[in-house]
Each structure stands twice: as structure tokens, then as C-alpha cells.
Amino acid sequence: MSRPVSRPLRVTANVIGVIAFVIAAFPVYWMVNSSFLDRNEIRSPVPTWVPFGGDLDNFRTVFEGDQFFNAMKISLMVTLLTIVVALAFAFVAAVALSRFRFRGRMSFIVTLLIIQMIPVEGLFISQYKMLETMDLLNTVVGLSLVYVSLVLPFTIWTLRGFVAGVPYELEEAAMMDGCSRTQAFFRITFPLLAPGLVATGVFGFIQAWNEFTLALVVMTREDQRTLPLWLSTFTDVNRGTDWGGIMAGSTLIAVPVIIFFLIVQGRMVSGLTSGAVKG
Amino acid sequence: MTDQIVGKAPRARRTPLPYLLLIPAVVALAVALGYPLVRQVILSFQDFGLAQQFGKPPEWVGIDNYRDLITDPYLWRVTLRSLVFCLVNAAATMIIGVGLALLMRHMAKGVRLLLQTGLLLAWAMPVVASLTVWQWLFDTQYGVVNYLLTEIGLDYAGHSWLLKPMSFFFVATVIVVWMSVPFVAFTVYAALTQVSEDMEEAAEIDGAGPLQRLRHIVLPSIRPVLLVVGLLQVIWDLRVFTQIYILQQAGGSTRDTNLLGTYIYRLGIGGGKFGMAAAVAIFMLFLTVVLTAPYVRSMLKQEGED
Image: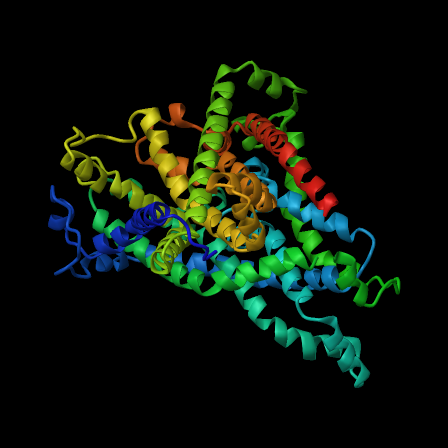
């Protein structure tokens, strides 16, 4: 990687690198910047590039009324329910897949991969009809049900990598020292899995937290909106009038997600690759 | 490799335990995906409209829905539009992502870190938040894009980006590509760090130029990763929904900008024609299979070779 390459190539690479950085990062910066600007600065023919002298008025606008907090409550309930159920189901499935050899194991894994490829848009009509029959439209349980199926395949896939990453010899050694198989698993392997479980959980959390399409289909009533739905209607209603408020709302939704994402991103990559390599 | 690891686990005691452990996941997937899929196939053969929504029993119409669709030029327009959008976006994402990954190897360490930070930020942005920001950037009156274009002497003051379909899709493409490039760049860069340096060096000593080395050594060694990432891009860009839907709400002409996902939504949830919408959805699933089959086959073949 460090072999000498021609100077023009290095210079070109660096210039393109800086330009690409600006394009990648500017929208994120612009969201935060605009969220601090007041109406006159937003509606000025020359953009205000840095929020010097900005204030928190836009955030106050967002917090007025209970729409934001109501949406946050719904989002939190749906996401937590989804993650708890998906992690529990995925965890036992991952143990089965990586600690046992049984008929149908490979076909289950292949099925998971195929399910990953099914577009949500190809199924949401009948999912809507199903939830309608079950009387679960506009309910936290209904949305969580379709979310679990959305995050489950990926969660199983990743956890399988983490479980396979803990050597079975450790459990064997504990069993020689007199532990039962179950005890060995929960005393030895489980603690070593904790970081993997947390990372996978956070990743699923982000997915469910950001999800828009299914929320739009399932939550048709205004008082059952999740945060992404709330934000999207915020744009509708105030189009062209209150970009500062919209950017404040976006910032509030995005910043926690970005922080979470930066924390788990590295670990997820290692979990994914160990899942891919260690079968 | 599979056998090696699993082989160490207790084998073949014919215990039902692994099956018991899989039950919760299987049941959840069967209820939330399997059952709707079956029901959708049934629905697509029924006349299920607003009257049925209010209690009238659905009527079997055989392949009528499919016949109506196939003879409707609008479906083919939407399909063609979706395919072109998918391929343009997937190609642009792959070219920019792989290009950045290749260039990252030659950047100064500081520049590389800077770029990686920027890409991580873009990657981490929630989709709806990035859509609002891009709408703001492309805003007709006070958007930065119009400001900058006007500053360099073009006539973009007060230009409305979402009004014309082509321009609408240009904005959608910018957003989709911006959101998708980081994943490609990071994954491919990770694969590039595994490419054997010895081989590259040997090729260089034998007189291979940078482009030849790229073509004969670097790209072949990351081929499996390129295949998977490319496949994911095609799948993701064929099903793009949120970006189109939200931009439509912001002022695009719905009829001229529908892709398959938004078409199904507007037909079914919006218009109450559930039977027809189900038929389009089945068509979309079929299209996904057709588009990805060659990829999947080539991936499976590679697995077999390993």
C-alpha cells in the first residue's frame, strides 16, 4: 500500500479526496448550521455559512406543542419492542446455527439471504391487509411485528458471526471442570458475546428508528406517527416557509443516530466479516 | 471452513434442540412475511377494491388484473423508468464508490482520514433527515445550489428543480448516490487492503503499468466483494421508495415521477385498488428475481470454487 506511486497520481488523489469530503460532509454541516439561524438569515439571498450569532429559537418551535414528543414516544416504543423481540429470537437462532449441525441448516441460511433481497415495497400491500384484519393498523404492536421481520434476518446473520467467533473449546474446558452444557454456555460464552449483542442491537435500533416506508403504510393516523413520518409532514405543511424549524427537527433526529452509528460501525464490520468467514 | 468450526461442536446426537431454538425466528418470519406473500398472490387474482374494503366479498377474476396491467402502457412506462433509474443509480454509485476506494490508497493519511470521516457522516444520516436537507439545498428561492450556480454565472436564480421529471430524477439520483457511496467505498477499501502487495510488486517489476496492474491484479482479487456490493446496489435502487415519495410530496408531478414502489403505494393504499396493487407487487418481486438471478448464480458459482 505504501509503494511509491507517481506524484501526479498522489496529488490528484488528495485533491479528489478533499472535494469528496466536502460533498459528503456539507449537507450534514448545512443541516446543523441552518438549525441555528433565524428567519431573516435563512431567507436572505446570500447564504449564511456559519451560525455566528445564531440561537435556539428553531428548536423551541419544534418543542412547542406535543407533536414532536408524541412522535418520539411512538418511535421509542416501536423501536424498543422491535429490538428486544428481534434480539431474543435472533440470539437463540444464532446459537442453533453456529453451535449445532443439523439437517436443513444450510437451507435456513440460504433462505435468510433470499429474504434479505425481498423489497419491502413488494409486500407492504398484503402486510397492510393482514394488519387490518388483525386490527393492528395504527398500533405499536402492528408496526413492531413487520419491523421484527425486517431486522431479523440481518440480526441472525450478524449474531451467528459473533457466536462462531467464541471458540467452542472454552465451553468444553468449562464442561470438563464440571459445568453442564447450558451452564458452560451462559457462564463462558454469553459474557463474551455481550459486546456483539449490544452492537447488533444498536444497529437494529438505527434501522427501525429511521424506517419510513412501512411506518407510512401502517401508521396512517396522525397521533400514531413515528419521528420520520412527523419530519416528512413537517416539510409538507411548511414547505418553503420554515426551513430553520425543519432543520432543527432533522438535527434532533439525526445527531443521536449519527453518534450511535459512529460507535457501532467498526464493530459491525468485524462481526459481519467473522460471520462471513467462520460460517 | 464451515465444517471445521461446526465440526468441533457436539455433533449428531439427534437432539431436537436446534430446531426448538429456530422456532421463534421461523414463526415471526412466517407470520410477517410468509403469510402476506401467500395472501398477496391470492389478492392479485381477486377484484379487491373500495367496495370490498367496505365488506363486499372479493370476487375471483383469474388473471384479469395481470391482463389489465400488461396491456396498460403506464405500467411499462413506470417499469422502464424504474429500471433506468435503478441502473443509472447503481452504476453511478459503484463507479464513484470504487473510484474513491482506489484513490484512498494513494491519499496522504490525513486526507484519507478526513474523507472517511465525511463518508461516515453521510452514511449515518437518517434517510428522512437527509431528504429534508437536500430539499433545502435545492430550494428554489434560498437554496445553496441555486446560489452557487448563479454565482458562477449561470441563470439559476429561482430555478425550480422538482418541476420537470428529468430534473426531479436528477435530484433524486444525487440524493440516492450521496447516501449509497459511503457503504461501497468503505467495503471496497476494506477489500483492497487485503490485496497481495507481493503480487502487485511482482507485476510492477515485470513492467506492468498502473492501469494494467489494476485490471489484471487488483480488480480480479476484489471481484467477489464487487459482486456482492453491486448486487446490493441493484436491489436497493430498484426498490427506492422514500426518496421518490418525499420528493413527490414536495412538489413533483406524481404521475410523471412514479417508480414501481410509489406506484404500488398510490394504487393500493392511496387508491384502494388492492387487487391491482398486489398484481404490480408480484410483478416487482418477479423483476427483482430476474434482475438479480445472474448475480446470484455467479456468486454461488464462486462459493463452489472456493
